[in-house]
Image (cartoon, rainbow, N blue to C red; front, side, top):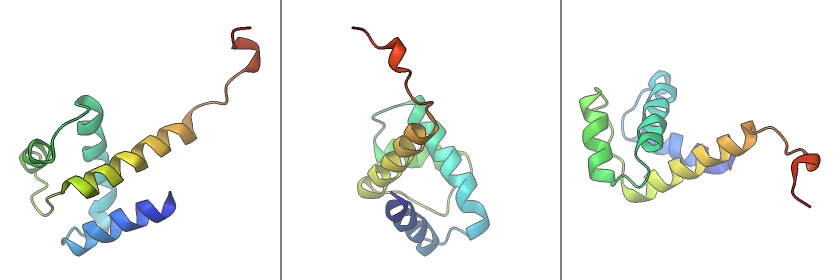
Length: 88
């Protein structure tokens, strides 16, 4: 998964997003994706541009990579399941 995150970071850097803005951009992107699952890239880019992120326009491919990274982060942060709570 680190390879996907690196690919996404490299893409953002290549699109002109400064290194010190990438983390903030990804947080904004994640919040928008969480608030509206299934959002189309065009709508997402409009919302990001409205928030001031004019440097980058995400395509479908890179949006899917971002979503995979976000989902992986969620899985890493979930507490381990308690076997005692599983149904018989």
